[in-house]
Length: 291
Image (cartoon, rainbow, N blue to C red; front, side, top):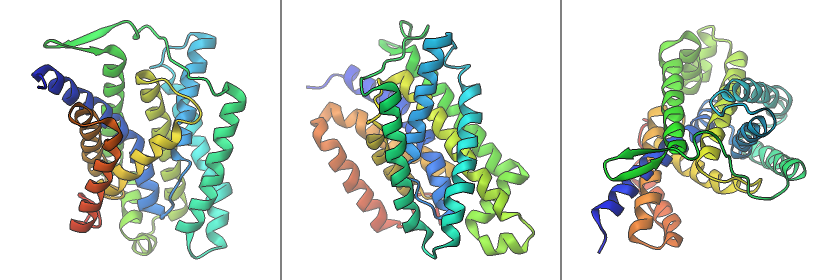
């Protein structure tokens, strides 16, 4: 018989990890929705954010929160580089950028993974910061301060992305390109610049999500593939390009993973997730929050 404590612990854990996965999926959903590019290297770039956090802390004692100031510009520049030097030249040579991008980004994924192995080896790495030994209490439930910090970063980051897309001119231009690229061009929007910004924002948000994940879990260069599975699920379930959609999708996935492991063997969790995805696609093929 399961106790109320176990269920409550699973519920709280699901919310925490779900919102971090939502942030991880936000940029992937944007690039797929805006540019029709499926970036299979997205999770690998998130892992770069994790290793930047670890390296700055170990070599210079930089607080994980301060490392955001390094992660965001570095990953944003990598996003611009990916657009200008990889995706853009490929798009000029093919009519099916979606398929081409999958092949291209898979190759990039393998390059990043192997570089991380060469530089950091394949051992599990755990972040030890001033948050590691602290905890936060919700009633009788003790939650690690690292998880609370990750939750706060994820919520603020998702809020910033939502504000950018809905309250700024550039963000509205991104949404316009996502909804109707030809109409956006006729309206005078510089699609080239908007697309580049989308890639930069996508990888910057991935890097911040990588920071959140290394606060909560150990990492290895090979863990990105398991993250990629959740990214696909959340992006498709929520609806491509929708920040509200990935937030809700992330919460659903997080709660299923966390609560599901309380009721059923963990080996069956992915089965439940993919059955749910099939149901969502049958009922609403565009995702929960896209018309």
